[in-house]
Length: 146
Image (cartoon, rainbow, N blue to C red; front, side, top):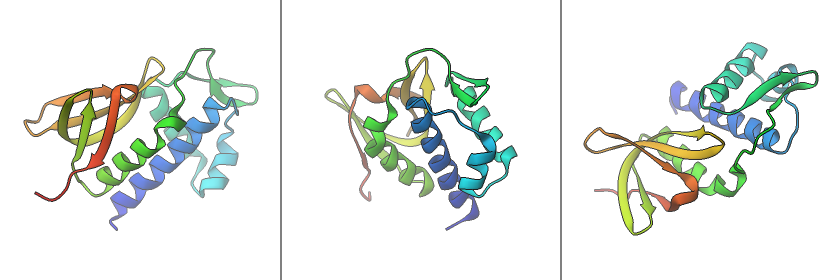
């Protein structure tokens, strides 16, 4: 496994754990997270900044970082989709996305939060970036060999 793929996989694991805890209203302490994931506190702060840039409503409080008072869609119900996307990103593979009766083949780029809702961002074979809200996707699967 390349260093890049290992780093990206570790990053996704950390971000998923942080998002789950935030959704469960557990404050995040960067020093504790750094020890848990065996990374520097600075790395955790960069991770938190990534979440903020992805429009995750995080604020710093007395007990640590937490969600601002707003509704954030529960990411745990999408974990199967997220794992499929994570594996495809790591292996530079395309996925097949089914939404309603339409099917798209894309190179997944990232999962992000937009105003409290989770969405998949990917690039189609023409190089156009496309976005779908996870709640609108009926199925994501790895594309079989061509």
